[in-house]
Structure formats: structure tokens, C-alpha cells
Length: 173
Image (cartoon, rainbow, N blue to C red):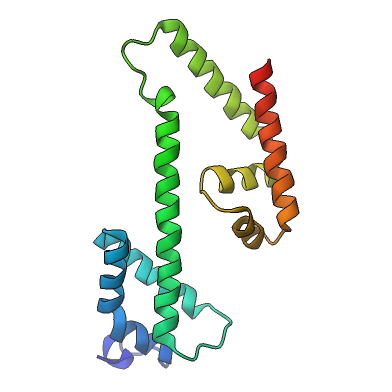
């Protein structure tokens, strides 16, 4: 099936990328499902790969290969994010799922610590908070954050250090 056959009538001219997406969709979803082990996520990422590729300013010589490379990168990001979310959940389980044998005092102290940490993060400068969030909660590397935000890697490092220093000061008190 070509782009013109697969798209609604009246669609303004199909590109080589559109044709590659329509013709390779099933293969792309199969490829992503193998990597992600989730059909729904694979379909979402296939669509996201097409959208990203269609918005790219790069000259695309092989649209199918470009779609698959974009999809592979997005799948990798998705796995990293999922892994980081699982790590955060495991780290936060003390606050989220108190064990029955914890004393009332331990639960109160944990709640106070959680509140204190939340307040510190809320009071960080916006850029510092954003960098810290992307690094610690989204699991992005400092290079990825620098690229995403259009800032230097040194600025990312300084903001992460600043956030960690602010959080470290609360443990001393």
C-alpha cells in the first residue's frame, strides 16, 4: 500500500517519508515490540518516530532507515525512562508503602524528610530544578540534558551540584 492509498483522500502530496512509514509500519511495530516487549508502547513510539522524522531538518536519503534509527533511539530513551521510574519507585517505597512494623516515629520522620526534600526542590531556581529533574527523575545524562536545553555541559554539572548541595544541607540539620 502506498501513501496515497493509505492516507485519506485530499491529503496534500505524500513524501517519500510518508510512503516509507505506511509501507514499513508493520515491520517497524514488530521491531519495536521485540525491543520493548509491549505492543501499545511500540505503536506509540512508531508514531512518535514518524512525527520526529517528518519534523527533521536533515536531508533524508533513506527514509525507511531513518525511521528505524529514530524509532530505535526513542525505544532506548523509553527503556531508560522506564528503568529510572522503577528505580525512583523502589527508592521512594519507604515513603509510599510503609511497612507495618515501622514505628509511628519512623513514619513521622520519613514524612518530615519527604516534605523537607520536596520543599527544597520546589525552591530551587527554575533552570536548576529542571536540570535536576531531567537528571534524577528522567535519567538523562548530562550531555543529553545540555543538548535538550541548549546549554553547556558545564552549566548542567553546576546545576546538578547546586541541587545536590541544597539537598545535602538538609541532612546536616
